[in-house]
Length: 110
Image (cartoon, rainbow, N blue to C red; front, side, top):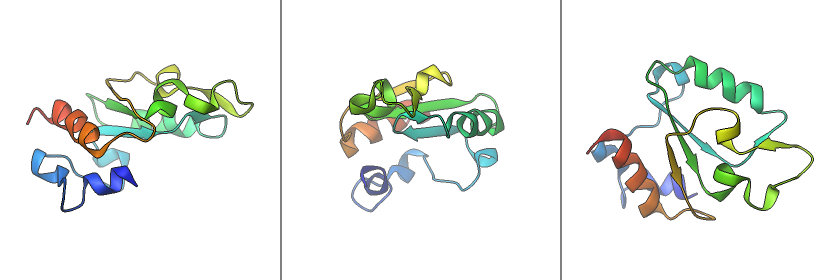
């Protein structure tokens, strides 16, 4: 919900050079929300490998940063940083749209 609002008319992240794309092959960064589950560890690794170098990763929210309330859950492998290298972390549960825009601006340099 918050990520959707970041690309809406109020926050308009596209003005800072951030765009949503359908394929990791067309992306410069991955934005990952939530903890990494057993079923998603391999797809996350594959998506990370599909992004052209340099690959940037944003761990969006407390669950992505440190598993949040899902820490030590049976189906959870760990936080995003346990599976792929993370460049930017955005705190919050849920993270505020302003914090997401700030992180994207850090990545784009705008």
